[in-house]
Image (tube, rainbow, N blue to C red; front, side, top):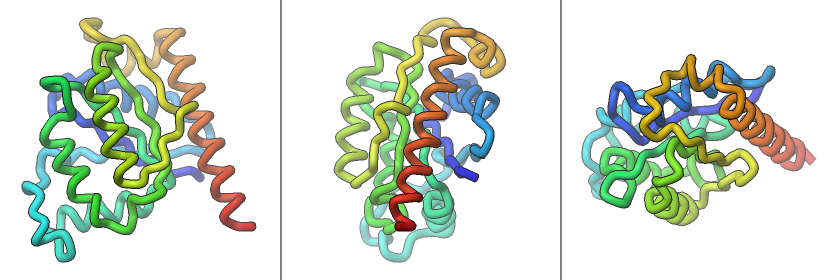
Length: 181
């Protein structure tokens, strides 16, 4: 079983980024489980003095990252960059041993969020994430107000999500086979 952790960079209740990740869970292929991390907004402000002895909520996040075979991220763009709460979550992971080398798929809910995607890629590459390009997609949900049911039902979007998840699963399984050899 391939275990994915889905993390939305948005704190909005009606976030299209979060809906995209929930739609992915509805469409996940056989042999894949998706767990959603919903506490990005609950994390304390990053304090480098606490990096080696972080608060329990940060320890729990790091453990979830360590247990996951891959991370699905969907992040909006605020002021041409990564939202502060999500960047804060990433900052807590910089000093962790669980994150480097972790396969990451980026699900972008808006083609206009190009600045945030570029910034996010730079941060993730700096953190030694392994961005899986065939599993990273941009879906145009801008101003469509679609929930996860409508997203999963849309034939074009459905195909994008399923193809991305299959590519992500394949890459993770390939990496596991290579690691066993």
